[in-house]
Image (cartoon, rainbow, N blue to C red):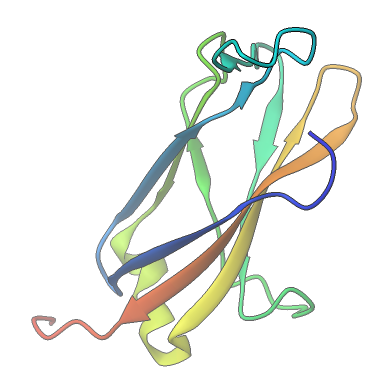
Amino acid sequence: MAGIPPTHTIEFVAGDALKFKFQIADKDLANPLLPPTARNLTGWEALSQVRKTPTSETIEATWTIVGTLGTDGMVNMYLSGPETQPFAALKELVSDVQLTDTAGDPETVLTLVIQAAQDVTRE
């Protein structure tokens, strides 16, 4: 994938566990009428950090990548409730997802805007 990755907005309540999953699929450029096929991510690594802005030095959280990346092209990510609780004060944060292939080449495949509402029920 070349160029700027797509952006997805996640709206949730701070303090709740946040689960997010998506699939990487590629079009066949030789046969553009065919549907995209899942990218084989076997052996790839994923990293995704949450920050207040793209240029912020402070990492607010780092997504846990759940499971192993494989042939289905799925990426499953997780943040626990205690990790997301501080997001209420920040209201909106950003993240992206960087995949690194087996040759060590990184590719940013998705940008996330995270909008956190204040929870009402809390301890």
